[in-house]
Amino acid sequence: MPQELSITTTTTTTTTVTNTKKLTLIPLIFLIYFEVAGGPYGEEPAVQAAGPLLTIIGFLVFPFIWSVPEALVTAELSTAYPGNGGFVIWAERAFGPFWGSLMGTWKFLSSVINIAALPVLCIDYMKQIIPAIEFGAPRYLALLCSTLGLSFLNYTGLTIVGYASVVLAVVSLLPFIFMCLIALPKIKPHRWLSLEHKGVKKDWNLFFNTLFWNLNFWDNVSTFAGEVDQPQKTLPRALFITVIFTCLAYVFPFLAVIGALSVEPSEWGAGFMAQAAELIAGKWLKIFLEVGAMLAAIGPFEAQLSSTAFQLLGMADIGSLPKFFGLRSKRFNTPWVGILLSTSISLGVSYMNFTDIISSANFLYSLSMLLEFASFVWLRRKFPRLKRPYRVPMRLPLLVVMCLIPCGFLVVIMAIAKKKVYLVSGIMTVAGIGWYYMMKLCKSRKWFQFNTGGEVVVEENDHERVAGHL
Image 1 (cartoon, one colour):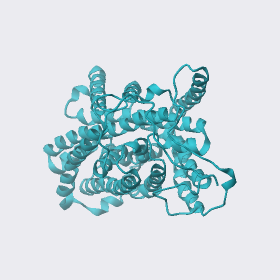
Image 2: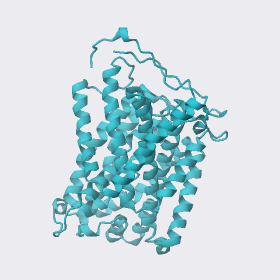
Image 3: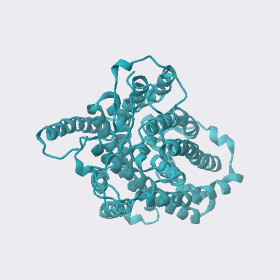
């Protein structure tokens, strides 16, 4: 097989920058945690959709059929290609520039749509303390101010965001730790086994989308792998620790609330955890949890905004986008063009309701993940001797099986989507295809400057094609 050789990083797309600290293990763990979860906020609709037992089973089983395979793929490919751009580079190396560009479109749009959901989730909790922000102009003003303020924090630097994520995680999880401890004497385990739904038809669309939204985006860390200290060692460790930590952070609060309270599934709307905290411990814990929800929304917002901004920088590095998309701040060394563009688009979709937002994000993300799993398998087949500091310990047939299981779930997510989601996702995909050909035209006519060196240096020798151990 062709042999893929060294990877080099260029700085031709950026302005003059200063030396900055790299991300180390602890802040990286919490950045990944906030990329994926951010705490047990936003998981309540799963109970409303399918009842307590199926929700508990879902959050216990889903990490093994989805989170673990996605984390393994990310660990192998991020260490093999430790530069900014991540999954865009993987698809480009596997199938060519068209698919790399389309991967970039799907991932970028799904991420910025997902970013828009986070201030919405925050407002859904805070409206119980400040009812005035529930509707109308006050709600939109709150969304605008929170989005712009958080975007400015992101502008100050990835290292600052990383350490802030540690503090945010601790503070936002504290009310759940208190709630679990106080609920212990009140727990009745038989409530965990309840299948009662009072004749209400289960909403599988909401159920699976809630599971998916709360446990995806593991691969977003790959877009700023170039900012990580010793990524070949640090990334796999951080991913595996975060998988375990995230699952526990979801399941324990669920077990505590479901076991301690006799509540109809219909009452489990977005923001119900705050009401549960009041019923279990009093108003003080409700207020603490709502403040925690606000802080928990900051973490995912910052982590995912960082990944989208560095994705655009990485695409500029490999020549998929014009050079100006890779411009960095002279003071903070952050990709300010990517931050500005991501913030603008997320503001544009923040008027949608929470369910529509996560459904649209999930559909686009499903398309991109089908391509990502295909890229992973094909790169293992295409470049079996590529240096992989972390390598999933399976041969090709087992890798295919490992990827087919989450791909089956992706197909389910896409099949149960609403017509509105199909329409929005179709329009965005067509726009992404059009964008690729427009960039080709811009290159050929030299309307914009593109990086022609690229970030990934590859040498393919057809005469060295061998079967190799897969």
